[in-house]
Image 1 (tube, rainbow, N blue to C red):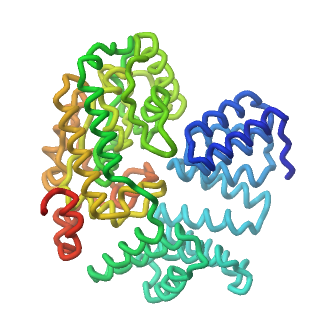
Image 2: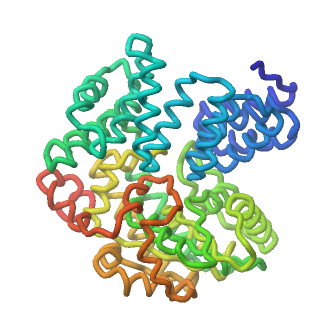
Image 3: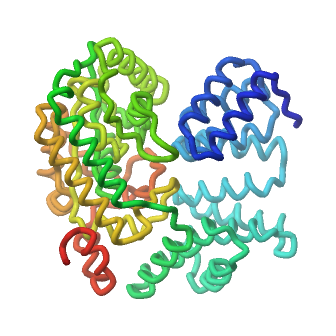
Length: 499
């Protein structure tokens, strides 16, 4: 289907693409969203800018623009496929399945839509349906008709069902062959190697598992400057603990219905949100970018850096109220909730912005998840993230990053606001009821035993922790690093545990 753009939309699209190529992602997305909203009845504008948001990982805006496109063009199979992808990535799985199926009804035999539907069914543990979809794919696309990229996609989907219902021996040789095919893009090879690492873990081959995960991280390692990050953290702490920061006013809009769940990646934030989601009057918001967007508006970052606003002179009462109003509007759009409900935001790296949260969302509470440093870091090292986390590709850098996180949290805990409850992941899984009761009391809710039955919830999760929250609480991840101790010298050096 031909895409028509007005001259203004075409100019905005060209500008946004150039900014993306220069790694000025936030600026590009701002232009894209403004251009799409300027022409809400232009199907072409919604399609190109919605797809741009989808590729850049700005899922709430992608969903919004692509919904608009589907209303304008009901029979656009590609639009429904893009919308399904965005819904899939935001955890709106039932609707994503519907959109994949409608796309296939409009245009049968699409490899990408059939493969994505199979992947989603596997994510949901609907294994028989996933296998049926894989069989349909194999019939429609026999091996001699598959491109190399399609072979990779199909192998990854099959490996997602391993070892639950596919024998590792049936998939491992193909994964090995593809993982070491240098004509395949490094990002895809990284995921193939990660899958091989998971298979090795499942059979208890710790040395091979570590080797495969290390290779997975190395093959697609983006640049990361640990010293530069530490200097930025120094500046952030200095700015927000200064006398000037004390004078920054709070918004006149209350944030008392917000609960922020923060910590290092892989520290248990998804688990806590899934537990709280079982309470009446608590609406899980998942990982939102609202606070990060506010930080970027105060002081735009360079390239793809995490925004860390240190120039605070612009934060007058008027500016704080404007930023707060925008943040409230973004939450209302992305997390529909009844008046009086508590909304959780489990974006772990909101820990960078706790003093800002105290100003924009006065009265908001913060649950801080702490985890054994080596366990947390090895979990990051063994995880294939959907979005770039360059600090996780090197054990020494991971250790440095963890120490900077700890420094930030010590600084913020010395401030009077926001109110922070620190919880140990180990306590949560080893002493679940008393620890969960402490969390529930902190957010002002009545205890409900259903909190401990989170694993049978129908709610779906779209993060790296989605498999864990479908299981009962388990303690096997406590002291997990001991299995890989011989390989962790660089991690311990980064953590400052050795010279």
